Image 1 (tube, rainbow, N blue to C red):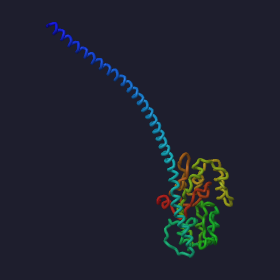
Image 2: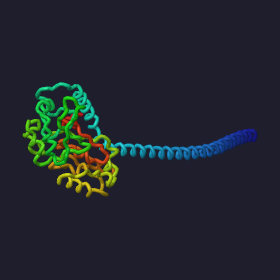
Image 3: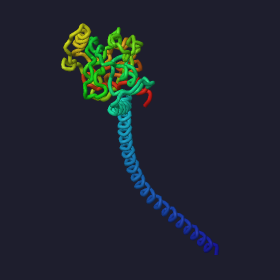
Image 4: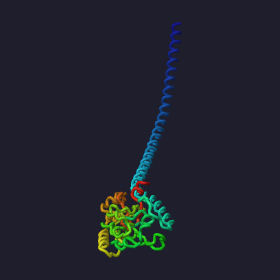
Length: 319
């Protein structure tokens, strides 16, 4: 009986051992299979990581390119800001000039003196000291004395095509501006007061205001030097005209700055100056500008326009 019991116990232990071995073997097999699957999963993860790195690198390059493009656009916009600021007043000036021209075309009968504001757009650029347009029209006796005494031959009289304004003095700044002679002989010669004798020095002159119309055509804006054909010297009949021609001739081959360097205002930098714009320079109209028109005449590209009757405040501060 003891042998039988011992054999049964031994059989039970053997069976348990077999089951344990089988269990461990199965677990090992599962671990092996799992390990193989894990290795395969690891390879997939590695491939996925590499693909992610490539995509991240591509996205970084695209982002950098986009940033460079944005920066370039901002720099381009920033470089255009000075140019835009210099040209904006031209639109305001054009509106005033058109209104003045329409007013002049409607005027076919004499008008009496009035308290017209000094800063009111005119159809014509008049000589220094001119009264407000209505007062000037009724005061001017069309004698032409101002024309005779002008040493630069800047003033001429309107012909019959200008109706009521026939015989009145004007200046065409594109052809010959006013050079603000120290004594203002045109004012002194006026016998009727149409050119007010209170205007007895250049600083008191109020003819108009200069504006830049097309900066892209400016020679200075592109750093171009002056050629002899840009100077357009006129026949000199007086000592003043010979001095002007000499000053112009000395500018040949140099960067263009005629509008600023030959401005006749006593303190020219208060009226017009060359400022940094993009890689080069461009003219800037300043508060002391009196609208004499010398810059409009001398500009090789003809990009400066004089708006008669208006002042710096109405054009540059009123937009």
